Amino acid sequence: MRELSIRLILASLRRHRLVALLLLLQVAATCAVVCNVSAMVVHRLQRMSMPSGVDENTLELIGARDLQPHTDVLARHQADLASLRAIPGVQSVVAVDSLPFSRDTWQVGSKPAGATGDASGGLSLILYNGTPGELSTLGVKLIAGHDFAASDYVPMRVQDNYSGLNDVGSLIVSRDVAEHYFPGRSAVGRQIRIDNRDRLIIGVFDHMGSPSPGSMQGPDNTVFAPMLPDDTGVTYVLRCRPRDCDAAGRKASDLLLANAGDRLLEAPKRFSDLRKEFFQRDQTMVGLLFASALGLLFVTALGIAGLATFWVQQRTRTIGIRRAIGATRGDILRYFQTENFLIVSGGIVLGLVLAVLLNLLLMRQYELPRLPLYYLPVGALGMWLLGQLAVLSPALRAAAVPPVVATRSV
Image (cartoon, rainbow, N blue to C red):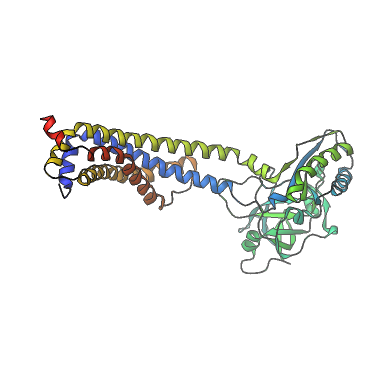
């Protein structure tokens, strides 16, 4: 057998149509699921690697919450900050209310300057605030304008329902917010309206992640306001060299407890630990999805190899006859590989259709993103490769059948 006949292979498959159909359906289901699972895994990995906008490797965090209310919380914070700045290796320290991935989100509505009522073109902004030096300590990169001056800061006045925002006259906004309100123009020196008052933009920064980012990374609608935290619960952020952060965190905990024992302190942690905690569920989901896809591929490969082995055993006499009349080992090998290619190709065609339909269902039920089209050819190539690798060992055994087997089987 010098030339393979596709018609001969198809005729053989028709005699085993049920088994071939079951394998085809298994390949189709695997292709559909693996394409969507691969897209979900990549999406989760991209979400887990979304930028925070801060220098993560240089930041040590300590959460503190007073057990009893104090009449002068700002003085407490200033005393704490003075003690923490004296720690060897600490370059700067600030007290903040929220950080990227901290889940503590404060949102405010904004409009173009001078807008009244339900004006169009507004944005929901995520507000960050902290003590002076917040941007430089976090490593937020200013691309235009300047940082707040000491005279810009006002207390938050939490006890007055966040009315401290009413006293804020200036803001530093993200690049995306500046581009939204002033496309193609400089935003520095211009105004936007928050809570029926126009606020002056004095600076623009590159990027700052959200405290609670969604499944999709959208525009960066974050702003900084010069408001001093005066709640009993804050996070102290220490900027230091990576090799000094652990020791600085331990020393900081001791100093904070020495300054006031009537408070609860969280264990010191790096900002990278905060990221890991926030994306823990995503990491678990990636592991589960990857394991399920790998298991499905393994079962499919076993099915292909098992069926090929069964057919080799059933066709031993036929293989021997073909060898006796001139078929080479390569002819036999190519026969089984071509047979497998045809079955897998049929499963891939059906599987790609199912992959698109499954993605549409997931988009509607779980708001997942659309399956990128390039996953389909990549998935098809992967299934073809899996099929050829799975059938290779049985095909090699078939090719090794000697012609004398034909005479023994008569």
